[in-house]
Image 1 (tube, rainbow, N blue to C red):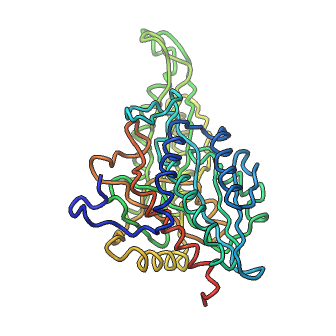
Image 2 (image 1 turned 180 degrees about the vertical axis):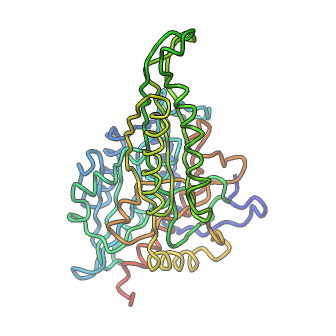
Image 3 (image 1 turned 90 degrees about the vertical axis):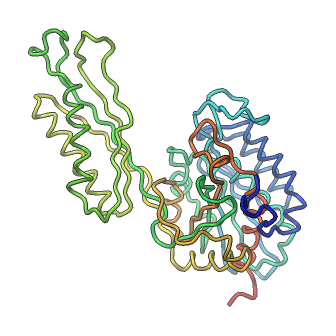
Length: 405
């Protein structure tokens, strides 16, 4: 699929050194896609990443976040200098693939349905070229291959285990492919990029009984039904319409038979926000509303509220720098204008709470080839790899250039 469907003869720039290794890196991407590994199981992936980095002259460190890999490249200039981090995620999702591709998952029920195989292969392609051009760097480059992004807090674990104490960074960057945007087009914004993502598991406890005699029972399903509707009033009646918030009940579990009132009913809820104050208010009101609705119906509620990922907030100066590199290398026509915040979440937010940086997107395609992530039919657009790897090289060289003021 051409990156520019209107003008297929127009292509974004690709460095000659990247073009020379592109087919090899695409084959690696397909291999990673065929062998997906879930959170904290990325042993094969980590072995491949570590072996390639070592082969190209990086100092390789393993074990942070259990299965994480960090590759360090010291530039050809004098000791010291700036310290730059680039991050890619490695884990897959528990989804049964339905693409029918020749390199489809060989592990039933596991799939690279979010493009982390592409993120990893892209950073490896850049790593190879940067090793060849290390004499252009004045400073230290840390390549962070993170496990367990998909809801299991791999970034938090790496940070808590001393990632930035051992590998200090002055700036940090990562990207995510984004279906629904033109393929190969880069999107940047300062401030909030992705929303927070929290989870609540609400257990309504009533009194079980016979379905034909509800008056001697306390029906937790009825309580849960009232609560599902009540939760939506938090967004519509308690939060400023100018502020983003989402409360979605994604699962309800209760009972096994039509004529039995169960003892309990469980609701599983995802909660999203962009503003820290709204995020805190959502937790307060969801918890209070669950207890209040249960009490009205003579039931009780238990709320297991899990703080997961904060919003992804991009540093303004780091964003300006990244945009400048993209404009100089790609040209303004390859930049997405006026990019708005997205409702997705990413635990790269936890790293950005420690180090200023930027999380940007690269369009994965529109329509055909633009299937949304976390979908059995999704695939990373291979056309993104050469241009994004080239951008990584240009960004690293620009940031670590000895000529930079």
